[in-house]
Length: 292
Length: 292
Image 1 (cartoon, each protein chain N blue to C red):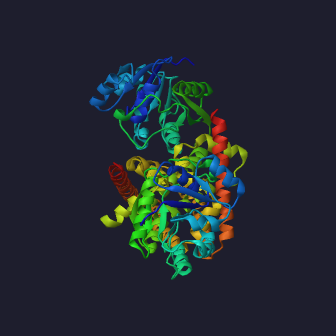
Image 2: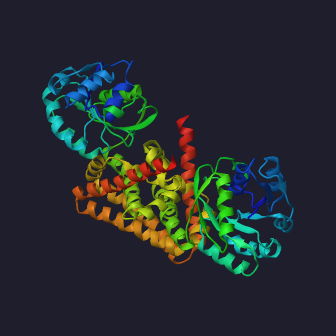
Image 3: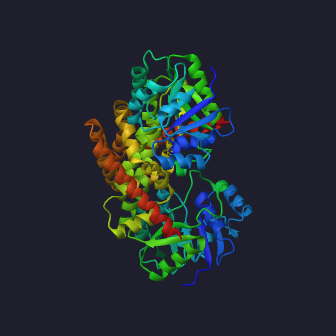
């Protein structure tokens, strides 16, 4: 499958950085964004080679369209894609959940000859907006695709991500959503609950003391509590059952620690904490090795 | 109060780094450690100016003694201090809990003329041992003292920490233990429960997928799960009630998030998450300002 014109729809932090990452690669980088100022800035920042004023014009040109849009907007936008994308062209996305998006694509694109392969590059920062975009955001990131109805389209999407610096693993939408609920979504809920529990409703004096007392532990553990609330609402709302399931996994261990402390069983506490350390240290070692 | 000879008892990561931080300052740095190899290494690394083979000889020389020992060992060691420290000299410590240590010191040193001021410099890494010590570990750290029976002794301890690079806040042992339970101890339990929930009992294939899928969120949120299990057992065991109390604070918010997800109340979910972000962003801003 020949892919020359890649169209980035939505030029925020993720869409903009993706364009910047592709500079000098084998593609012609097309872009469209709803807001005119964003379109102007994208050209100025050299995040795209060409910008279009309407999605219609842009979609007609695209061999591969990457939807860098909020999850709730995607089903509606797929209707526009169905109207204007070329048969045989490929659509993908960058959404943090895959089940709802792949379902919407299956419905919207049925019998259109347009292929859909879901994508989820694991990249981002706590910031948002094109003004915070940078060319190395995707560099050495891991990512997933959920294969669609065309192996050639899947391969083209994998090749595209490789050009942006992302190493791809193939996975089903269901397994993906379960995985990210465990490895990411539940962490955001925990971090937010910690930030609230530790910082909420304190007097200025208490707060000052807490500031003095906080070492790097709180900074790191709560870092992702500073993520975008609208985005995380969207993610959790679209992955509700898997998130509740992942929360249960955490609950089990947390309740076990509480019980051991309440009963004064600190030999066991130390053993369980050591097992957590062993698992995390192996993970770190494996991850370092895997990156080489 | 004239403090010239400072004695570091216990030359692990924290004791060794403390000695290194004091190089070139106004003190003569004495040291003692139980293991002979550690004593030899401390001299070789220039962590102390002089090393003693027995605590008796060392304690006799000290104007200020800093106990860099595991919490459970401190009560016993304070009995040795009572026998050999000079009346009018000062003892402090670096323990992560203060209530049990201050109580033990009050009992052990009653009517001895030896002063005790509790200390807790907020510094450390996941590593341990003198071989991992470094001179800047305490640089720009915050710390607490719990004032004792002598304001002059307290001032000498504050001055000592200033020389090592630590900015001190005065606090009661009870308030200290409550504070660190909230800002540190509960985080370690949460991080460990997360590491266990996410990594435990997975098949190699699943694990590999999880490795691929994990972005920086898990790395940071679970970082402190790699801390020393024996040390954390010790800390939690010696601060049990405050830790259980701090866990309840976290529980409240975590359960609230779960309820909102279960009920599909995502407007409220977004509001609560945004409040967590607001609190943490204010904390970050305040902290950055405060460091200047």
